[in-house]
Amino acid sequence: MVPSTRSKTGDLPESSSSRPVDGHQDHSQQSRTKAYPSVDSPKRQKDPSAIPIYTIDLSLPPEKRYVELASDFTAQIQDLTGLFDEVVHDLGPRIPIRPVCALARVLLRGLHSREETDELRGISKTAGVELYLLFCFNTLLDLFMGCTSGGVRVQNEDDGSHMLHFRTLDWGMDSLRKVIVQLNFVRKPGDEVFASSITYAGYTGILTGVSHLRALILSEEEDAEAIHNEKTRTKQTPRSLSRLEDIVLQFSSKTTTAAYIIVSDGETTSVIEKDRVTAEVRTSSSFVVATNHDEASEENRDDYQSNFTQGFETARNLDSMHLSQDYILDESMDRKDCMVRRWKRVCQSSRRRDPEAKEEDVAITEKQLVKWTTTWPTANECTHYAAILDPAKGEIFWSRRWMRPMKPPGCLLVSDRTTEGQGG
Image (tube, rainbow, N blue to C red):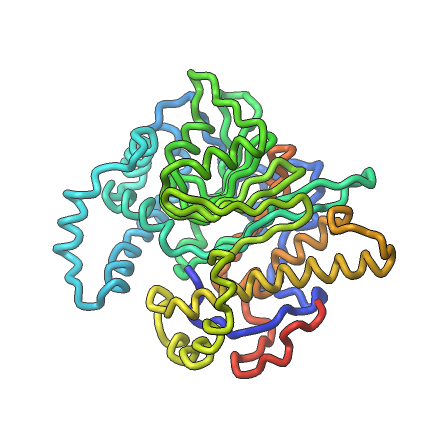
């Protein structure tokens, strides 16, 4: 969900990286060779930015897989039931809540995947939340998210380089910040983790996920059953999707809901702008980024910007679900432009050192990527979490959450665009 109070800003100097309101530092300096502390670690408990980690044993019946998680987050999951009323009110202040709830109880009887439906039954029983509310949560969550995600080439310690995924997730409902979790999936007790995801407690789809030799990041939950079954199939031989081209072809040719899908194998990253039956694909071995608009819409950027100023003050006073399309598109383009400018500056600096340097030879440092991912406006007042994934190793390399909204670092209002294009 895009923010409703975003001030228009240009890219900021990297030295002015934003900090969360609560003042806690992120854990970006953790060594990539060290495993994250377990959910019970005192270090993680003292660090509000650290995302709690849970192991999901897929050898258990679906109803039993999330019992521990639901038990630990019972109070928070119960608090989320108010989101249903909030969503209905946002759709129309005069819509009566009780008739809608009664209708939802009758109509919301399951997800497309029977396995995920059974998982939600277990969460419902453990947390004491009506099942239809969890179905609604899992269905509507996809509709209002914003994100910045993509891939960039990063230096290795041995002077080589590889691509890492970067990803932020933006939402307008602060109550969800309390239920952000990392899930590590195993096929049976004692097995190595073969896939990980960052999601919300009570949500069984895939928002941000990585597995060995590939990473999947969904701006909206695209064909949840296909992806979920791919990572959870325990009694059948998994389909062979070892090549990035195979994954891109599979998603591009399927009939799905609209989504922006970013896939990477550590050497190449592809952005799939997925419509119901068609897809546009952009692929790069150096840098690629996607936010919440189709690349083709950038051709009309001047029209969106002309309407942005006029509607900005009105937008500040409206809930984000009521924002104009022009505002949403311009804000999405602003986030993308900032990432693109950061990459272009790195390429320009490389060419100054070596005039014959090619873009595919350019790489940034891991520290730079963490800073890019946590600097305004890539991370903003609506960002719930940020993550960097290593698709070649099948690991979440770095992650953090914001328990409180990030403060704008003195950014300028829409009427002052003097910072556009500044270095940073």
